[in-house]
Length: 107
Image (cartoon, rainbow, N blue to C red):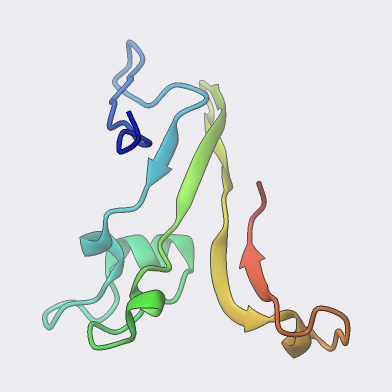
């Protein structure tokens, strides 16, 4: 159906952790600071600077999306997908495509 473009599905392995191929979307409450927590733990762990609660919607929507790519007994690896850095290519000194946004990660 036209409106069913995203499906919430928790596919966990026997150990209770997400399986390879899972896409994890950050919960806004974990990254947007509140009055009691100026730097939420998830923002501190990832190093992504949190947007203030009164910031513009596009800045508050800058939440991480991670694709799980590898799982071993030593840990889990993933790729950060399309998180806008808040900068433009022109901020990096590029003249071509200078008005295009610069993203963290890749797809």
